[in-house]
Figure (cartoon, rainbow, N blue to C red):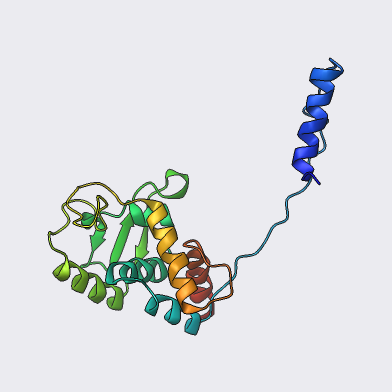
Length: 180
């Protein structure tokens, strides 16, 4: 059975190609898409997820996502110079809608980032989380898909039944700020 969108396009094809009649886009009824609310993780589920990361670096990615509420693409483009430890802020350049914004840098995250920095060898030049293979020697941003897979693997290892993806942390951070 075709989806509602597929059947709409089938009718359009039938009218234009077979019947050689005009098809009005304005008069085309499109089905409404269901709006699903994100699954919000509990504090215990977030701890299990972060503890289930495949590696120290993946753990750092998850901590950064959760502590800041960054989107996946924003975290991938994060540069070393974006960390402002004096003002306890992280600068996000050209985030969603090409908007710049600042997010809070918690003392715990700053401590974790400093530990990550001490362990990194060679030190990243531009991007805080560089891509370019195991050695991370290339000065290029990492793939956003890597973050997606790291979150999915951690969720599977933690045994979480909820739909978890990198943007789940964005919702969780907003809920955390409202509740606390």
